[in-house]
Image 1 (cartoon, one colour):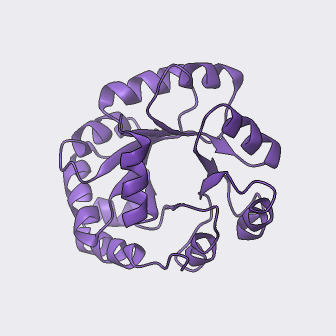
Image 2: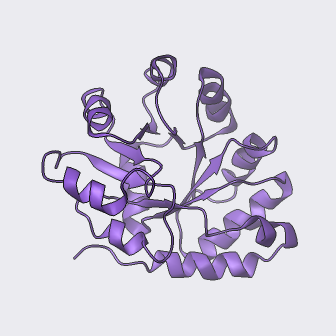
Length: 213
């Protein structure tokens, strides 16, 4: 796994993290290359398909400039399998007691999922520096995170879930948002048809999304 310093450097450069569900292992290399051509520097591959772990393994060998994370981590088995596949960071939708115990055994970049102020406070106290806010739009969106920024200015978030090209800038303008996760960068149809230019074009547009001044 990469260090938090490396992860922060990647998202500072390009604060949009594609959150992708990939069905074919052979899509790994062209997908990684398309993201890099567009200027993105990180990607989260969800563990929702049989090919996911092989996709992570193959993408992680394409180029050291691309950090490849594993998402939808919900069990100790997911943690172990993702690390063995070479994941640079881990992302969870939430945190059960058993999952927290499994995560505590690793020192790399882990973004545990939260959707309330109490969860955010607890995860920060446990040492997690960046939290996944999920499902972002359903859980209150940018207005919720803006409200949290006053009482919890020390907690950083990566909102995911309902983030789009239209609202991503609203999130990125907040002082407590360091990146957003979005699934629009590469659709199932684009990957199935091998339309990697479309992925590159959307990656380039995402890389230009505004950050706060």
